Image 1 (cartoon, rainbow, N blue to C red):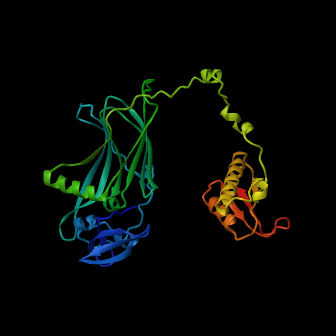
Image 2: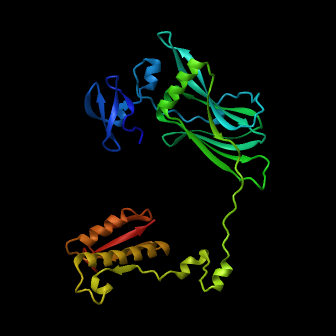
Image 3: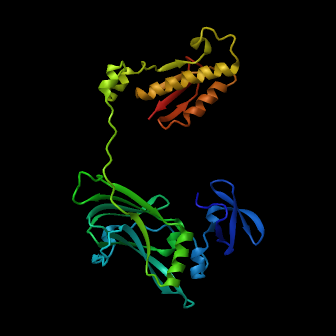
Length: 340
C-alpha cells in the first residue's frame, strides 16, 4: 500500500494539500483537505514533497523508461580517498538547477556505489519502479573505490524506487558466503527531509549503508539419517516420493454413502466436512501425480458442496480451469478440473 493513515498528500486536480485519514480499499482512501473529508482514488493524489521543492503544479508523469547500460555515459572510476573499512554504501548526489522563479530545485539524482572495504566485489544490480525493472547492470568494484551506476529523475522519488544488489567476492573465500543479496527502497518523505538537512548543513550526498561486512558462509544443517533408520523410522528418497503416494484417481465420487458406512446420524455440516476433506485429499493426490484432469462428482442438491469445491479450486495455482456443465454420465452433478 503506497499510503498510510496520517500521510500528507497533494490533490492533483486542485493542487491542494491534505492528509490520509482512512484506507478504504486498495484503490481508494479517505482524505481530509481544509477540514473537509472525502474519498479519492489513489491516482488522484500524490505525495506533496516534490511540489514543495519546485512550487510547480504536479502533472502525472509517465513511468521512467528502461535504460540500458550502453546508453549510460561512461564515467571514470575514481578511488575513494578514505581508507577506513566501514562497509559498502549507496550514495545519491543531487544535481541542482534553477527554475523559472530562479529558485534552486533538484533536477536529478546521480547514483554511486561506494566500496569502503579491502575486498573486490562482483555485483548484479537492478533498479525498479513499482516492481518493474528500469535499469540493470552487472559489473565489478575494486577495494576503496566508488562506481557510478546511473541517474534517476528527481520526480521519480515519489514512486518509491528500489535498488537491489547481489554481491559475490571476486576472489572466492571458502569461509565466506558464495553470494549476498541486499536492497534499499527510498521513501519520499525521508528523502525530501534529508535533502533539506543537506542544504542546511552543506552536505554533498545522501548515503545509505548496504552492509558493513561481507557475511561468513553458513553451514547447512546435517541430519544423521542412519541413526533414525536404526530406531525404526522409515527413510524415503525424495526423488522417488511419488512411489509412496496413494494411487491416483481420475474420477472421485463425493456422495456421502460412498465415503461412510454410518452416515445417517450425521448432521449436514458434518457430512459436508467429510466430503470436503475427501475432495481436498484427492485434489492434492492428483496434483502430486501430475494428472492432466480430475472429475469430481458432487451431485446437484442445493449446490452447497459444489460451491465450496469451486471456492477451493479458485485458490489453487496448479488449477488451470474447471467447468460444471451437462455430462451424459453425471448430468450437472460433476465438475471437471484441468491442471497446468
